[in-house]
Length: 585
Image 1 (cartoon, one colour):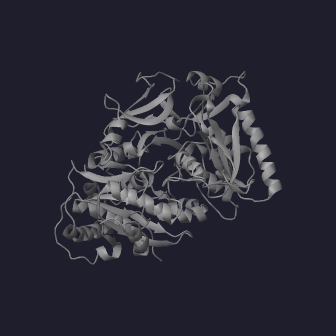
Image 2: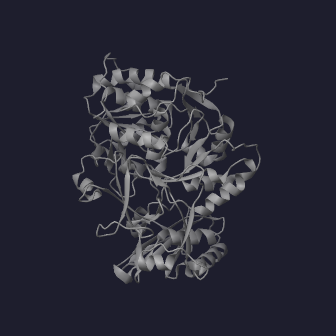
Image 3: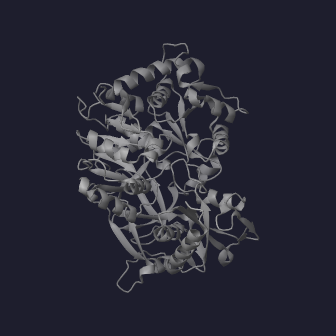
């Protein structure tokens, strides 16, 4: 039976001496570690040591050199497979700039996927697109109007070898990472060798995860998203860490396979958005033996940290060795390569319960007291301290730096920050302040020396002088809803100021009229009590929501879908129409 790569490197751990990805891979290739690709049933399909990865990448690079020019952009369908890893690193050796692309399953059907791919091809100016042979037809169809060759991974290896390489230097580019697609026009975030290696050093170093000789990681995160690509493929390679990969679709079908791999291979590090932990707790049937005592850093990233589902996870798996202190919240975004802050290892979830009425009225995160009504209480989770050699400031709308517990825009500076967006000078200019800081568009406040992230500025709903967070409405609905309900999405439509309507869409897994009426009554009452503002609740079928390539809810695109008349009201049994900013059927 094939065995996975070992946890032990066989060589000293080195993580802070490499200025390019190639330097990192050349050293990793002398070690005994590497990538392992598993099926959803926990069967090891492929073992790819770092030596094999280096050899295969060099071979592929010599073939790509003959059909490309140095600096060409190459789209690569980011399937969770050894072939993707080989092609990504082949681009590094060939002096090409890879652009990992999402897969059809993530973007709401073939038509939506083709439109998104066309936009990426328009902005990325690809010289070629590499794909598994199984996806050639859909990719070729999407790029029918583009003069972009579509080449299967297999066909790359049949190209003539040129017996030469032209690797990136320390001052070169590394990749283009597309934004997760919450708007209609995805932006290509430039990653350079310098920004990527700097972020990897921060992630694995003392201000990040403090990687040791005995660490190992498991990942189901998609490789077209920064958390999967950087956090679970590039950074582990840069510190010679063995990685056990599970395809995201396999995780969705069998989430406990993730925990099985952690238990079986004694993995110490693994990351997920909150919903991944929530899915495991919901699907657990206590039908197998797990030992999660090895898991020292259960990372949380990619979306808002929600304490309730994480508590459900720790309560469910405490009997199987999981230590709630292993939870490691973090904050980051693709524009800073990946990571900006990490909670100290072993801290667990640092909760901060604040008075939301004061928050919405004054912009201050004042701690709740015994006099604070329950409906005005909100618990946030601290996302840790800024990485070494980086800076973080909280600024108000006028650019003034804010002190403790004053809410403002999160701004970042440091060696991991992108130089900008590919072929998009206007977006680049808009992303940075006049004094050169990255304005993330996220809001947060300082809790001593740790950052608390409260949401996206553009998602805020201003109503009668209050700043209402859509997450508060969504979480209140989900907490009150039955198990037959899924995702919720809140946003405002209509005129500016106080004339807008607040809409909440809630997915339901039933068509029973009596049950739908019961859900509507219960959830409406809960929202009225918790939010204190008029909210129009509409029950919609499963699949109505639009998510980004990283699995985040895209409120802007759900709102657009509603305004286009493409969402059905289950109770009215007809599409929702918006007339003069009022919803009807």
